Image (cartoon, rainbow, N blue to C red; front, side):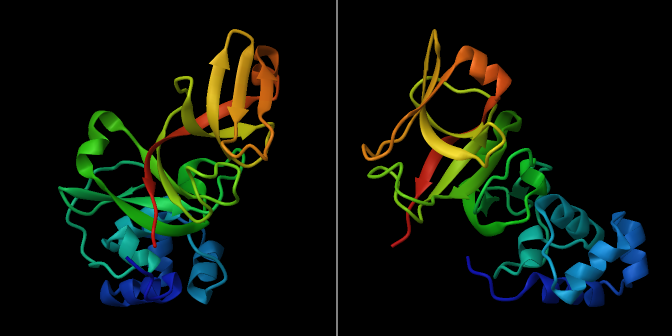
Length: 220
């Protein structure tokens, strides 16, 4: 999928088609009037949470509202964070450029792209998000520009590739190794040094796992 129109224009189009005024949308969606004005002026884009609220209020597909070349109509409702309401067989995951520290996935505004996953993956209430790889610390298995699909988790098995929050910094992507003394965040590229933390540091800094890789997507 590709973006063919701005969020600003799609929002205006949806309001026109649904014949809803700004004051009415503010009331229906329960969002701040100033924030809606910024959306309509093209000053800022909505976070995932606000996209969901607006899409619900306007009865349109969230991904369409973002500007992607998909149907405006909503045909499937699953209420899963980070997954678009799309079809029975496929669901859409939002792909981010960065994972800012302390910011819940549904509040992040830097949505770069979308990726489709099998809706069977949602069973058991599982939630997913995507992340665009930056840099070469996980080379050669992961390349700059790759997209990884991650299951939203707060723990992992030793040896899994995860996005981890460290000491209030943005999420870092590393292979996680655990031992009785603590945790090692291991880059795959030998030019980069591992990040080693004791059990005490894990609690105090803190070190938090927020997602584990389930798929790698690479485009030519």
